[in-house]
Image 1 (cartoon, rainbow, N blue to C red):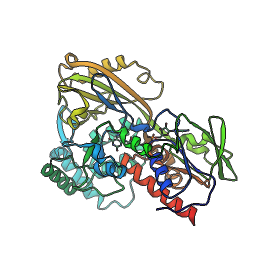
Image 2: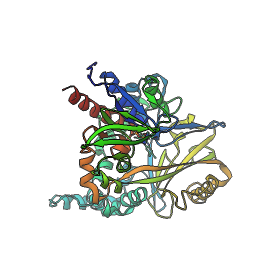
Image 3: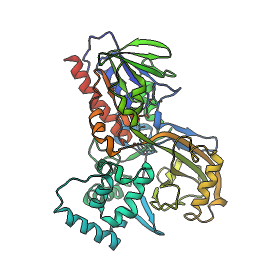
Image 4: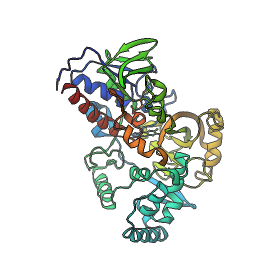
Length: 446
Ligand SMILES: Cc1cc2nc3c(=O)[nH]c(=O)nc-3n(C[C@H](O)[C@H](O)[C@H](O)COP(=O)(O)OP(=O)(O)OC[C@H]3O[C@@H](n4cnc5c(N)ncnc54)[C@H](O)[C@@H]3O)c2cc1C
């Protein structure tokens, strides 16, 4: 696929996460000159992995990728199959396997039926996420589970969130989930469900884990392009004249470019882009920061499933993940890690606690779920990210939908999870970016 573009100026890609790396790789395949600037000293962004001396592996964000993504990147031979993945919900002291256990609760079921019946006469679209959940799940399940969970990860009232939050999290049909589960049992593999919306889910797409950690996805992409990638190179500004990108400034040096593909958080663009004020309003787009506390414990299978959702406010964490349920090799034998997701704000009382304080805090609240957890405690490692989840506020929903398609500045594209301001897993970030780059190169060559 070599469509040589006769432009002496390169395309600048901002960021070396999966979106930036896949954009750069595709541009190279098209014969377009490209340079990728990564502000930190390594690639992978939110998909970084860490190993400690005692044999524990921590992933920053992403744990679960698919065999299909691994193949696209060229690391399928370096991956192990994941054989099991499951989720449960704990509410009012009762444990429900997700999603079918919830359907077995007569109160949730009757309320869902009632709301579906009402929906037959409802013509107006949902106005908010709260409205969306009540219509989709019925008021009992919406009020007790869906809405508290969404409010916990977003830190925002569900009535202030756009209905598209529900569309993003919208469950697959029951028949499809049943089929995928059955296929998984037959093949002894964790069939992926809810980890990609750009490509279809099927019995041939399952979870795998790279032997060297999830960061390997990005490292492999980077290995093929060492001459294109500049680490420790923060893009300080993107210079625009007459609403057209002209250059970028990196480490004090101005470099003329034909186009910028940015994967930096979209709400930073107003500060980054100089020479126009047409992006000023993007500064109000918000991300929810998260403190991810990895508690290392003696024992295995201490949670009922890989993921445990906790909608009740008495818990400071809304989600617990015991990744070794699915990837036993992430902890030494007979030991485990539980990741506690706690919503925070940068600099607040949770954010500024030491790792040890966070470990103690989590143990206090884990006791109710894992009696005697303190006796199992081996240590803690906390990771903090200011940009865990994009918050779809109703007040800027229209702007979100338009700007993520077109920034309005010629030659400036904002893509990826944070640049595209969307809840994208890695496979979606990868394919959506490729599609965008293909459109861009087609336009450039035309
Ligand atoms: C808690 C959590 C759990 C997740 N779990 C999963 C999962 O299980 N499976 C899955 O598939 N996905 C998961 N995801 C999503 C996945 O992590 C993301 O989709 C993916 O990593 C996003 O890649 P990206 O390239 O869009 O952005 P990023 O990874 O954020 O990359 C952006 C890069 O840009 C760089 N940058 C920013 N500004 C500048 C600048 N001015 N100059 C130069 N460089 C700059 C940053 O340093 C960074 O390296 C999870 C995400 C979170 C937060």
